[in-house]
Image 1 (cartoon, rainbow, N blue to C red):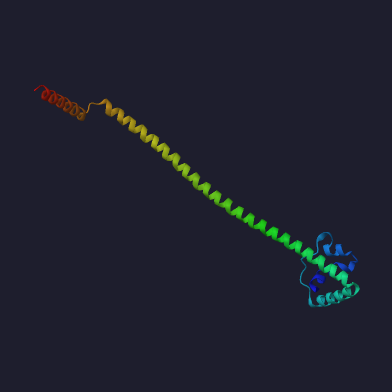
Image 2: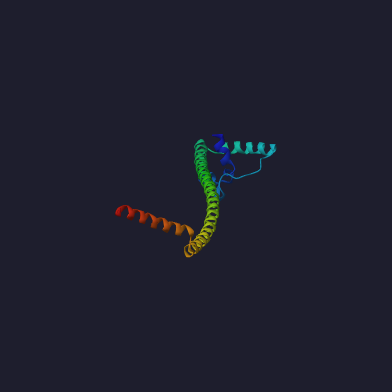
Length: 161
């Protein structure tokens, strides 16, 4: 219960209502202050005791409950922020991986384009060589036709005689 009263004490001396004191006004109830010196702690303890004596047990209990509710709300918000942060980090990692994959794909596509151009040139050269080969008389072609003629003659000779 002392932890709850300590958080609220910084706001209660001004005579604010319990909900305004628990909410900490517009700026919120929890602020980052530099750690107090030893003299400041003693003054704060005296102030805390004086305030506790002025407030009824019901008011102290109400302050403690409101403080717990506010703390739970801040913890929930902090959890949401941490979840969002994890999601952002995961998205960043996925984006980095996507960029790397796109770079690899870009390199592969460039290689495919180069291979395609090379293949086109090779096929064109091959077609020209085939055209030249069909235009000139070949010794192998003459041997092929001579063997076909000889085989035909032998088959015919065998059928006749």
